[in-house]
Length: 288
Image (cartoon, rainbow, N blue to C red; front, side, top):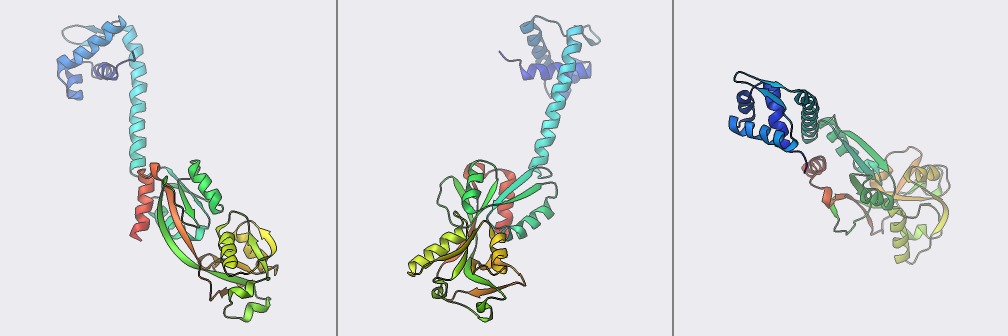
């Protein structure tokens, strides 16, 4: 049998107050109820924790030692209460976002950090497959995915939908053009993202559907590496229009006959969705 919390609570209150009557008032119990809890504690362990007389109660030797332990116990209970209240009020805690492209969530993260400065927010970048792995292995709280994912374990919130565009260096022959067609990419040296990248998969599917071939000039890992490779003239790149941003070395070219769009979906584990910090972040996005 484990020690009774209510018996320890009654003992601690009497030891602090020096009186069964005052302890009962503090605990909002009757004096006989408090006395009964202490009596049961003494009887079960065969000890006496108080010397009692008509005017007062005094701790015995074992009572003194037990009081030292209950002080620590109830101090920890107070600390635990304060900790949980801080988390409930979002004055402390952490939030890890695994994303395929930070640009899509940074406005929301900025707003969240301004409202809840006590929360430690961390953004980790990877391709969509790796982002999902981090979410399912509980190494991330939220995942930003470059494609829709049909999985009953996930609670998903669509964020945006953007067209696919090509981009070239300013020295490229296409830099003076306003746009291109998919057929222009047929056999053209391309800077390709790594396997598992939604950008790569989307381009491959779109080219295959049009009966066009891909000529891989180089394969790089990550958006930044692709931008640098194109800036140095290695080949033509393809990216979501929202992710290109501004780079004075590059020229964006809409692909006029491209039917595919990139979607960005924010997801968390459905089993974790009731956590206050996740609910608050998702609610803030819905507000926007």
